Image (cartoon, rainbow, N blue to C red):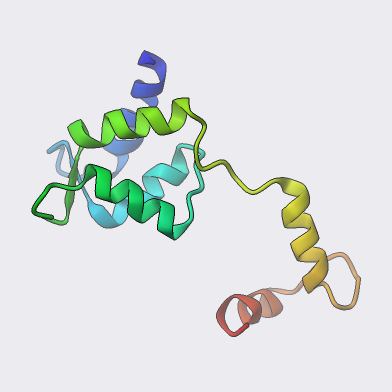
Length: 113
């Protein structure tokens, strides 16, 4: 548990620019992902509801974030999508079956379709 907490504190401190043991609420997704967790937006909002103050301030305190994120890591929540599922998704987008999609195609798929 101590090792897990150390990893979380280190990741949190990267975004704690003022050394105040708080981070902007908008940074939580980046912190969680930097720890190897990949929640959906709904899961991220649920996590935020557990760590935000009762009167939201726009900042998350380390003392509230640490126990919740420790549980997330120990339970192995929010795992990445399996590699074979991602590969299948890219194969579906590779209409010409050439083994890759161009940057322009990817941008189009992510923004238009």
